[in-house]
Length: 238
Ligand code: PXP
Image (tube, rainbow, N blue to C red; front, side):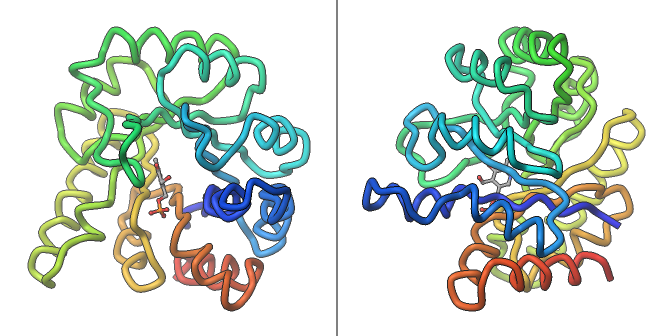
């Protein structure tokens, strides 16, 4: 049964829209935990468009489940991670103009920098997951860097516009899941997952963690965060 990591960035997005103090992602994390979240995921972006440094500090002190910090390899953010020591860091690529993370990390091309950051964070006792596309050579490069987990980018699966295209993408995720297991890597999944498309991904045997943000927060606006998380948790448990 996969664990559910709830990404609460969008709660901070609403707060930043007015540059005020509410809604506080710290409250959101508590409600997500009450709804059954196994982890809280936040992305501290270099442009600070949603999560702020203060959020990382306060969440570190208050989150009772696993805190998963998504981040790029920028030196400034690495220093914050080393100081805060979340249980897990997920390294992601980051572009200033993007609306959300586009594509996985190119571990092959950025092997040196990614390897350097992985080592620094691992030396501080932090588990590392690399957010990559479901490709065999990226999985192999991740294994070579000695990380414990990879998170497969499920965006292409989520964006598929026909049943056939979706099945194709699901097969790629499934094959990548098997390759991850053979490489001794834990398998996480995330990006674009919703109440409608999550079940086949949750059923991939190797999937042990799902990180979901937008769909849960979108539903929470209408039904409340605790029920929205509980509903997602029930879906991925079947
Ligand atoms: N996993 C990673 C690595 C991400 O960058 C994001 C988006 O911040 C998510 C999961 C969650 O994606 P979504 O908001 O589409 O559920």
